[in-house]
Every structure is written in structure tokens, then in C-alpha cells.
Length: 200
Image (cartoon, rainbow, N blue to C red):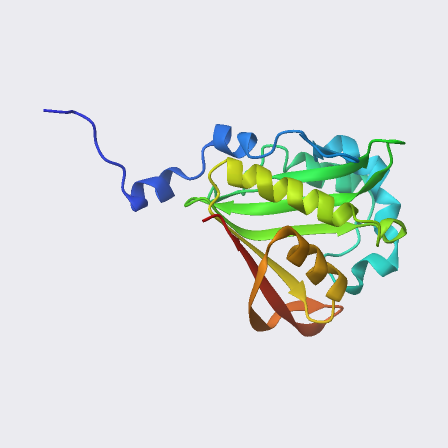
């Protein structure tokens, strides 16, 4: 008779995401033109000024960092890749161009306990839009997460952001539905368009 106790969904939820799993979800990644580095406090200085560009916030709901020290502390807090309640992992990458070392933006995801990516996100600083970097980064992140047994990935795009929709479509994400009033941008409720990538 085995002494092994089968884990239930409740057991897994009570334990939360394991630290080693969260870290494994966020290694260094590599593409033809980009190095995807696990984002942390060391990136704050390079990101702070580009994050002040108003154009970046046309389609995304995050706010500008108030100062460099705040950004450094905030990103130090995500280096363990775990949400405070341990119910999700937060793999997050800084996107660095190999040719000159310039940081172009970031990519991230939220991974649930049942290994679904409930939110795949990314942004590029405006100076680097329209050059294929977002597609390259999202493809690398998607392929990596699939390789780590993430079986379903969800991304949302603010209605009207056709450039980001094209990025997801090129990588193989499929439009599923409109989420009415799903986001608040500059104080205004906005609809999102949901895209899903299923590893079948």
C-alpha cells in the first residue's frame, strides 16, 4: 500500500506557486536580434527615461514611474517572479537589442497554478515601433512558455490598437471575443479584444 497522498486542487492552491517553478518560467531567452533578460532592479536606470514618453501610454493602462528609486524598488520586488499571494508567477523580460545593447521595452506574462498564461503582455518604446521587435519577442516568450507546459496563453489588446493585434496574429494567437469595459486608460473605460494561443 502506497503512503503517497494525491494532491488535490485545493492542496495546490494552498501551497501556491513554487518558487523554483516561477524562476524556471523566466530564464534568459535569445532571438536573432534580441536578448530577453529577466527584468529586475538593475534595468530601472535604462528604462526610467523611456517610460516618461507620453506616446507609450496611448494603448496601455499602466502609469509612469514617479521616480527612479520607486521603479528600482518595484522591480526588485518582482525578481522572485511570484505574486504576493503565490497564486501566479510573473515571468517578465527586458528586451535588449543585441547590435547595440539598447533596451527596447519589455514582455511579461501571468501564469496560473494550472499552467495557463492568463495575461501575456508587452510594450515597445515608441522609437522602436514598426520594426518587428514586438513580434520577435512575443514569439520567443510564447514558444518558451509552451516548452514549459503552459498549454493556453491569453492576451488582450485595447480596441483600436491594430498594430498590437497584428503582432499577436503573426505569432498565431486567434481572436476570441470583445471584453467590454475591460480596461481603464487615462480614466476612460475601454474595450479589449481577447486573443488566445492554444498548444494543441
